[in-house]
Amino acid sequence: MPAATPLSPLDVKREREKAKKEARKKWIRQNGGSGVTKAEKKAIRESSNCVWCSAPADETDHLFPLSRGGPDEVSGIVASCGRCNRSRGNKLLTEWDWTRVCRGLLSNDAVGRELARLSGEDKDPTDHIPTGRRPTHT
Ligand SMILES: [Zn+2]
Image (cartoon, rainbow, N blue to C red):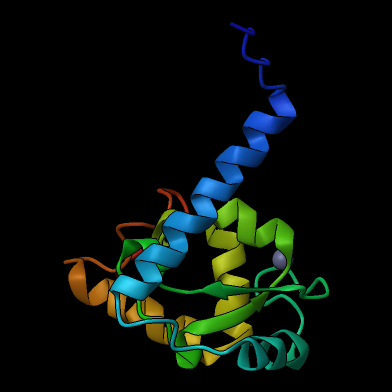
């Protein structure tokens, strides 16, 4: 019996990426299908630079991550560069880099809407701001 060829680290990585993509597709199918077309995503990418860092946008980012139960809707998607998109992963805005979130807040209204939605779930909307940066209540 021939020994199985061991997978190279690259193969393992590729397989993992494939599985991740499949899982994402399956998730989208189960949750009412992809509401956003490729053309719509392209339009979003081309409409602005990365809302988080102003670099040229080559990806789109769901403000409320799909994997966390967010909707696949044009209104909840912003232009993002790959670096920011990967940095954020499936974090909620309140769990991510506050500096970039603030920049996004200034460049896209949808970011403010998502933060408002998130703070509706919190008692104190400044809870997620790192201590030291919180506005002082007078
Ligand atoms: Zn960026």
